[in-house]
Amino acid sequence: MATLTIKNVPDDLYKELKQSAGRHRRSINSEALICLERSLLKPPKDVNQMLARFDRLRKKTEGVWLTDEVLSQAKREGRL
Image 1: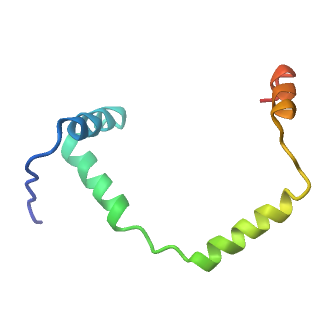
Image 2 (image 1 turned 90 degrees about the vertical axis):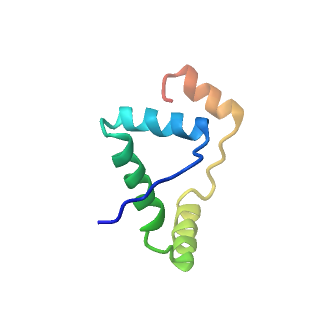
Image 3 (image 1 turned 30 degrees about the horizontal axis):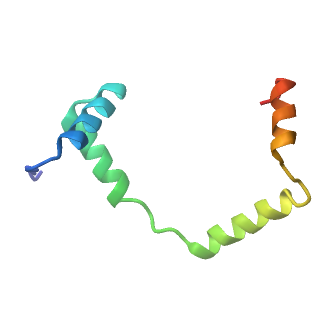
């Protein structure tokens, strides 16, 4: 396995990485590897497949109009 040294990591980024590692109960090194894997090893997105999914969702919610009043009423009724 290769070894990677990362220099000049901004303090804010390091802090976020450290907090994320703590939340996931991992070392900072393991968390960095997970982040790299997730960002680099993602399968490419099929744009046509995504558009077809959006169209299906749009058709499913056709005619449903959510206004501030509808949402406020739902909140008052405890539905949200």
